[in-house]
Image (cartoon, rainbow, N blue to C red; front, top):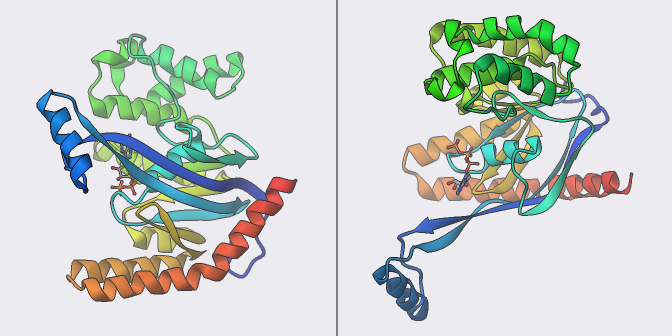
Amino acid sequence: MDANDRPGPATVVVDHVGMDYRTPTTAPPSGRRRRFTHNLRRMVGMSNHTYVHALKDVSFVAHEGEQIGLVGQNGSGKSTLLRIIAGVEPPTRGTVRSTSTPILLGINAALIPTLSGERNIELGLLAMGLHPDKVHRMIPQVAKLAGIGAAIKRPMSTYSSGMGARLRFAIAAAYQPHIMLIDEALGAGDAAFSSRSEKVVKRLRANAGTIFLVSHAAQTVEETCSRAIWLHNGELLADGPAEETARKYRWWAWNVAQDEPHVAEKLLHQAREEFTEKRAANLAEVEACRAV
Ligand SMILES: Nc1ncnc2c1ncn2[C@@H]1O[C@H](COP(=O)(O)OP(=O)(O)OP(=O)(O)O)[C@@H](O)[C@H]1O
């Protein structure tokens, strides 16, 4: 889609989504009383907890024909957002609505370790809603794409992590999703598998209606997406044409890498200011979708 084109109909509505993870920590909290409780719990062998605010009130609408890249530094919430859109994890707050089931390439299939690879393919394809006749016809081709040889007859619990990743990828790739989510960090496998999986991803991307892509190379987002969203510490900081948004992020990241914290801070502030109007437009669109 060209940046000047009108967007197609809405396919995914991310409505005020927030995600908090409760995690153990050894860091002492601020405040005397809290520190006292923290030390006391530690002395009696109990662990202390803190909350990670992985996503903070994220709202936007994705449309038919859009390829949306998610950019942001490590830990900014990109994978969390993909998992929530895929329905793999429920958000702490807010909702995600979509016109069809979004498929997160590689991990939607919940595989069962005690069953063979072949049986997992069967169950995975059935879980995606494919007809049993079609599933039986497809098993050999999915097994071929996984390319793990005779291991396909063995229980998954005996696989290496790379073999498991290949199988998961092959199952997800067997189905052409309309809303497709790709987390490049989940890509696993050796060089031969990577080139094979690249071809499959290319084909799936060409036929999908809406695509979300998490890539650590902002340049990939710039080159292959129509729109980009910049997440920073769980906050939606920018949302616009891929080239413009990914460049903003790259310029910020470059300044962080050059140890220019003041410039980087100024750029964050600038991005936030520039996003004010678009944020209001996003919220209005989310609101309008809620009314439908
Ligand atoms: N299951 C979990 N339990 C606790 N904290 C989590 C969990 N999953 C993610 N987090 C935290 O949530 C925040 C966002 O993580 P997320 O993986 O979404 O970031 P990311 O932008 O995808 O990072 P990266 O670029 O490194 O892959 C991080 O601070 C991370 O530590």
